[in-house]
Amino acid sequence: TKLDVLNKELSLRNNRNPVEAIKMRIKTPLSIYKKLNGKGVDFSIENIDKYISDVAGIRVVCSFVDDIYMLADCLANQDDIRVLQRKDYIDKPKKSGYRSLHLIIEVPIFLVQEKEYMKVEVQFRTIAMDFWASLEHKMKYKKDNINQEVISDDLKFSADLINQLDLRMQQIRRKIDGEEE
Image (cartoon, rainbow, N blue to C red):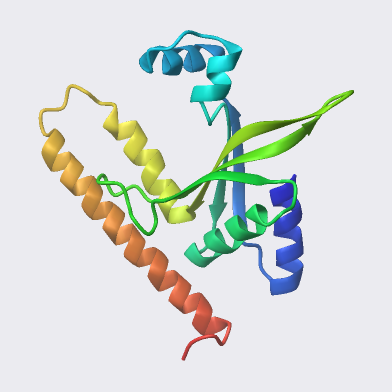
C-alpha cells in the first residue's frame, strides 16, 4: 500500500510512473522450515523472528535505475518504517552479475489491541534486472549441465550488457526530460 501511494504521488508529480510492477509473496511453512534447518536451528517462532528476514517479500520493478534509489529513499524516510539493512547489489553486483537493491525493513502491523513490527524484504529492480534474474533463476537450477562454468560466464556477460542497457535507457529518459544534453 505504501509503495502504491508513493507511485501515485510520484506519477502525478513527475508525469510518469516510477513503478512498473509490484509482486508480493509470503514464504511457505516448508520453505521457512528448510531455511531454518539449513542454518542449523530449530523451527520455532523465536527462531523465525531471529534468523529469517524475508518471510514476507516484495519485489518492486521500476523503469529506471534512478527510480529505484528514489523510491527506496522515499520508503525509508517514512516515519513508521524502520530500515534494518540495505544491500546495494546495483552498485556492487554479486559475482553472478545479479543486480538489485535490497532493503530489510520493519513495518507496523496493527492488531486488535497492539501494534507489532514485521520484517519485510523489499527488492528493487529495473525491468531488465528482473528479466535477467528470473531467467537466471530458472536456468541455474539445471544441475545436470556439464558446462556450468561457461554458462556462469555467459550469464555474467549478459548481466553486464543489461546493466549497460539500463544506463543507456536512463540517459535517453534524461534527454527527453531535458536533464541532459
